Length: 218
Image (tube, rainbow, N blue to C red; front, top):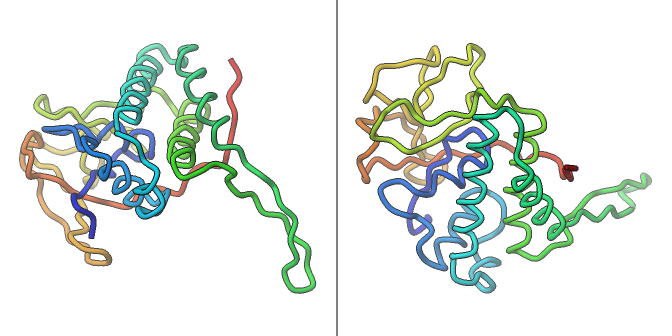
């Protein structure tokens, strides 16, 4: 079990990082960085806990990413500062291709050459890179509940999702958020989330698989 639960409702890992601010900042302590990295399925808690510095750096990255993605959603094209930000962190977590033998076959595999912190930043940067190169900026939205600050990337077929919780048909009434909750590993339940300004209304769902490594060009 993690010391706290985190929201993974954004549809993309990069958006899930933005949603680590709800009623308070969920990345307020060094341990929170390690817990979020493991909850996101990126880096083991034990690997991050030994090397993570104070979380100011990750919070600064999150807010710079927020400004860049919001600008991309508004203008339809990513600003130069966002491209530079992502390239910086992609370069910190380079991919190394290795050749190995598997039985009678010779195969290649790609692994990260970065340390735990670099892998965490790199995973978020790759997610954001995939979003701005393959995604639709019109589908990155803030929850329609005026008291909610959560964001999401709409992956519904209709493209009409308005609320931060997934609901059938992509639409729902305000204050009626259906959310999948994992109160413990492997135990799934569904709850109705009242107005999501409530600090106690937290949920955790597993994020999508991480996108392939990439590098952007301005």
